[in-house]
Length: 287
Image (cartoon, rainbow, N blue to C red):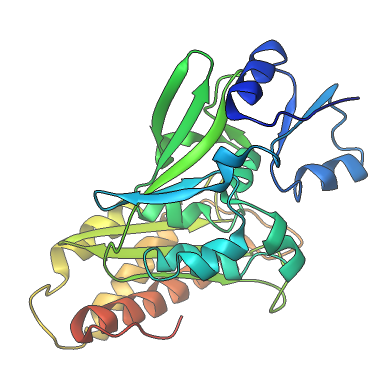
């Protein structure tokens, strides 16, 4: 196995163009597990940890450009105010050691249905920046996931950044696991309320992470946006039902399909309660 170690983005893109079969490593928290269990044996690995351009983030015109190599620990400490749901999701990833190594870009590259950050990217309508020697393009998050652990990148492309709205209104993330930490999600849910629009997305309950479109449309139409009153239980229950209906889960060792649908409804109702509390009071509720 060949180990490629570029030190600039230009060098990384050139290596990927010449070796499209090379598997990129950001934090290595997914790839190394596959190698250790002999689930994957690529001819080449492309180590991106020494490329400084990937480890930077910036804000411009209300948009955060998050470099693909920024670890979860920095998302938590540096972006908790501007992208709170992403920080919430990052806190649920693995152990402190994993959060210091793992990255949103690596999570995207793995494209697992259970990836913790995916529902947040969908709910916030993020754009994925993909680059190659041919140029750079932006893909909507919902167009990025094309199948189980499959994404829309061309063979010569690398994920270089994720573009997300900064301070995009109340937002929440929650997940269910078989224990409190270091666990793959049984199911997960992200919610964002912004300017009369709703973003709602599920994880670990379908072949790919996906938006709950019917739930979004219902909630955007029914929320009393100009009111400061608590929401009626009937509205929250209907929203939860629609979120559950958006799922296409399976039975596996972590949970049954029926349980996943039920749990998503509960997560939807809870996160809506917390997000609406922030909307009406201006104070972020417990996540």
